[in-house]
Amino acid sequence: MHDIEVVKKDGETYEVTVKDSTITTHIVTLTDEYCQDLTEGQISAEKLIEKSFEFLLERESNTMILSRFDLPVIGEYFPEYEKLIVERL
Image 1: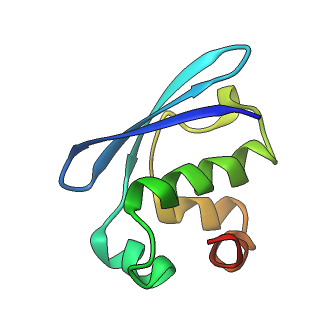
Image 2 (image 1 turned 90 degrees about the vertical axis):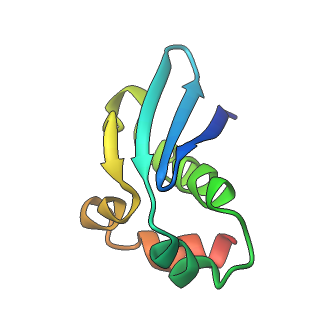
Image 3 (image 1 turned 45 degrees about the vertical axis):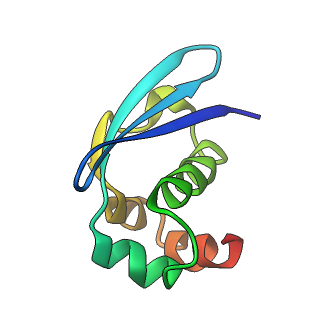
């Protein structure tokens, strides 16, 4: 299990630290609109980002995850992302 810490930096920007054999830091942007679309307001943006990183870490190491990205970009690399993340919430 990976240790994932999500901290809101400002309006739509979050800093994510993943502690594994190597510690990595990522800057993720998430709009309220996209968060609402995926979660229907049922969970926080931080929890959505945490679950999204769990999804990514099942597919690649934390050192392979982009250091800065918009959360919807995950779906460009993994088309099943939105469907699976909604099922996990």
